[in-house]
Image (cartoon, rainbow, N blue to C red; front, side, top):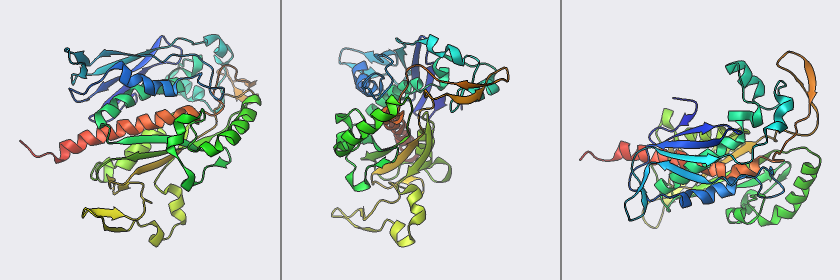
Length: 364
């Protein structure tokens, strides 16, 4: 499998660089006859695009999606045809001159050194392929995945921690996320977090954060044992997001402090005769297969590596130097990662749904 492609039946390939003419994705395996237009994709891209508030990079991109293939309108509205769907997003506000100083010096915390060492060449303009700009393509693919999943499956994410400031688990409110510029999962923290992040931003520094994910409506049975585990594939997809350094499913690392009695999700019969779980420490997945409960995860994002404080590094020529990264950067990259987390979950689940259908549907 290509390192630019993920998924099995619902396969997504992304392409393009931060300062190239455009970025985009190709989605293969999308079923036919699903209503899909650019208007279904754009609202999700608008949530991720830069320049939306003082807390994110001020790069100005409209992130306008253009569908190039895989959709046809026969008069009743555009629908998918079952063939590859290509989506293109133009780059409109690249300022490559901001990166002249790093053409030969490696930025600490970035992928500059490892790209140079692996490939012998790197696009230093905004990080090239390793830039978070690439995630716009993932969000576009996630919009298509949502159409495959249907409205019964609800995918929501939000920031639950910035630096040392945390939202208590019982205070998380995903309905608050879209109503504030921090994507915070609680309206009560916005003022305090805004003041804190203003201080970080004005100091030219950055801070890490945690994004929580919740998916409801997934039925029991998706995923597969051992090497096709739903939680393993979800964790891999979330870890592939730029700046992600840790993923928890359900109780996650807190499970190490629980007893067997507290960790096991007990069951009783519900009113309809199906199992009713009394807790959800497993995060909606047992043995790699969905339980029908909400699927929950948390993703830890490191601080943005581009900061104004000079950092020690070396050049391609082997000289030691101090480097101060200029340009337009997010003081907390996790804010704009919220729609990316949702998109990656959507793609994994669309793939799981199609594979489940293939594994369980009776032969005709």
